Length: 99
Image (cartoon, rainbow, N blue to C red; front, top):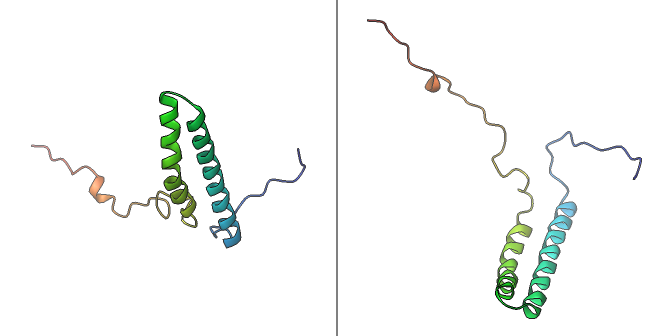
């Protein structure tokens, strides 16, 4: 355990390009390591597990590339900011009149 204080980000600035590329490379290498494990496991396993592992070995490259290429825009997948309603009149109940 280190005694270094926890650092909080107080800015909306993006991470540096070198940090972004490093993170994407790390995610890709982890995915490819998992693919290699699936491939070796598919050779050694029997039955249904063999086919699941082979499917994983075939499908993982696609997902690894998609995840690795989700670079700079990653981290805010649900839009560019908080939802702010501009027109509240549309959600208010209409006035009622008594007859």
